[in-house]
Image (cartoon, rainbow, N blue to C red; front, side, top):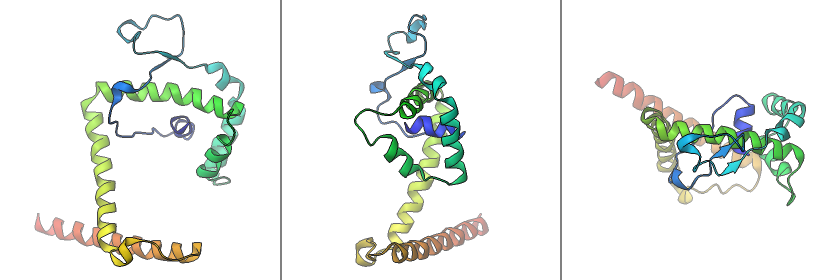
Length: 175
């Protein structure tokens, strides 16, 4: 469902894949000959589900863009029952196609894999700096209320950004 939601919002979900060999590739036409990919494309994405829910999918994407609903709330509501709603199924079908295209690109394009790894390393590096800064109480957020937690996280973000800025300026001077 994540790949589908990202696609609806105009983004590409690009996770690092530990084992792409175990991933399911989805076909949009059961009878089409995909050549060497025929054995890989074991699943079938039923795009008629997306077609029937298209207007609702667009409303959902608009609500996410405008901030009317948070993504976490939407995902929770879409997946709350054992049998997903028509909208959830439609988003999953679109996500399956998008994930297949992503996997094919990820496997085929070494430069693409390198760019994804670079972005992930940047994010992980920033988190490592934040962990080093937030050493008191083993880095745990101890405030009980949301406002207190937001204050702690805001202060941590401010200090982390200041350290990143200082390091950037210092390295720029050194070079």
